[in-house]
Length: 432
Image 1: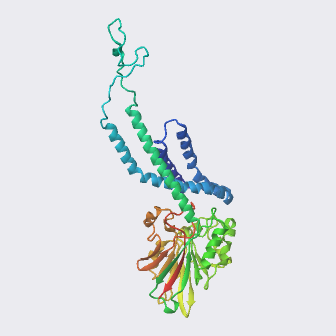
Image 2 (image 1 turned 180 degrees about the vertical axis):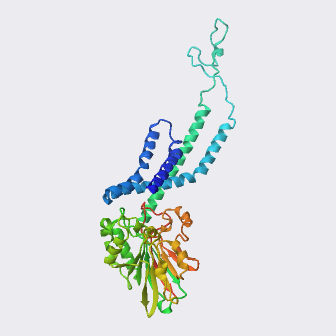
């Protein structure tokens, strides 16, 4: 409940900021556009909480209906904020220049005589008839100054123009970015081929290929085709073994079992292996039902344990640990159980969903850790915030002497949008 309240508070603050920066300065008080945009933002505030709460109350069928508009607005809202914040400095400069032009003295207004328009008087150059007071027609010519808009109206018009221009740029930029991100997220994952040298690797195992896929996120926005495409692409790599490094699902077996069924068709020489991610612990039934379901599909779960991979007369240890989110329920990672008592002379590859687990793994002499979780940031500039929690955002790196590869993941969480972090399936090729 506390988490939902926090999220709702953040959503309300963001919507207030968008109204204050995009709606208020670009519309007139009491106008129809201001009323429509204001009430539209008020309704959109409740769209995201409705998706979360409605899914829990009414199940996956309701969530599938509300998820698309909810998640799409989340992405658009995010990039509206990004573009609006980015425009703060140009907006401030434009307003400063406008104020400066208002304060500068303008040209001296001419007070040329103006024709009174009296048909009797005729042209101002023609003499008019004498009057009783001795005043000629020429003296009846008006000398009133020309009618013009006041400085206050001019100032307001400039500010409204600047505000509307900024709002248009932010809106077009957000929609274009989200459109590009949708195309990327829902397209084919990129195949990343990564050679990794392990000092302990027996030369006879050189060339061993490990397919790595993570963060598939089978859920309310994905169909069976999403899983089928990933399986087809993984099989095309002809890997020696397949590893699924957590965050496979966003729901229960009853809700998503059919969408995960294509995993039974994964092909590899030494089998397919799975470790839990944090999202497996978010489901109402917990990870155990998915572990049993995957076993029935021919995917073995490594639950704080390891297996020996024998290849060309040599041996490598493949270990897997549970995700950190299992700790409160007593189902967290146990590296001692997974790695203790093994032959330290041969290499070990560790499957651990979160990159941050590499710091503890380094103490056990792990040669290579394979992780996911970060999505590579998924929607830039989120990638700039990931290092606050995780030591590696994406790609191959070394932490405390242990090599780690972090895949960007093959799916998406939340909005079906990826900007700057295309989906990925990785083929690790071990070399001596």
